[in-house]
Image 1 (cartoon, rainbow, N blue to C red):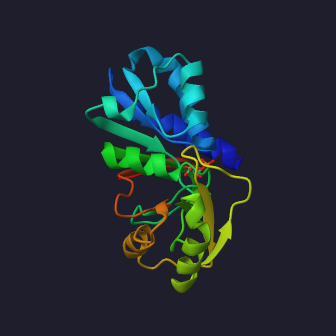
Image 2: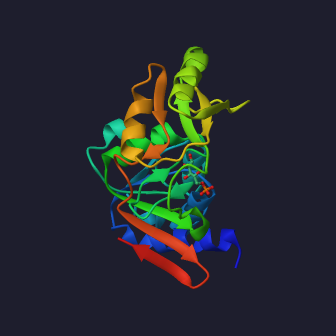
Length: 218
Ligand SMILES: O=C(CO)[C@H](O)[C@H](O)COP(=O)(O)O
């Protein structure tokens, strides 16, 4: 079984959490692509979707699923998205696909966050995967210097502009023992839009694709 097979199995398992007539939040990434594909069978049961990226929006629309502005949605029952790393406490690093800010906004609104991953994403401590930080372009060098003071090694993700018109710094060499505090510290740097730590608002349910099938962590 490949890593992609495991992603697909986790993504398909998420469909059963969707209630008829609901509006769903949809993340970004290769695991979410499998999830959107799995929506084909139930697309007529959905009242619409809120999307975290232009890529997911295009895929949802191609299936005939209406994509709604988050501002027009009073509440959101469920958000489904992948992760780059996740701990047993359901704290995550996200943003490998540069969609972290919209992902974090939708996750904040949603009542339930379902994280879909293959088992390579499970880690004891966050930080091996470089932590993405979305930054206003003119603040890039200043933010990089502030991140150095926090003990991380920021690297400018060349050639990437987020859907919000900003840039990404990937922060290497962090051993993140207190993700809630680091999330707060990074967001307090002027010029940071948000960072890829999802600790203050972690996942509620994790669906893990493994060789043996899909494990559910509630
Ligand atoms: O946070 C994300 C995008 O910004 C993705 O959820 C994360 O990068 C995982 O991606 P994939 O499903 O391709 O492994």
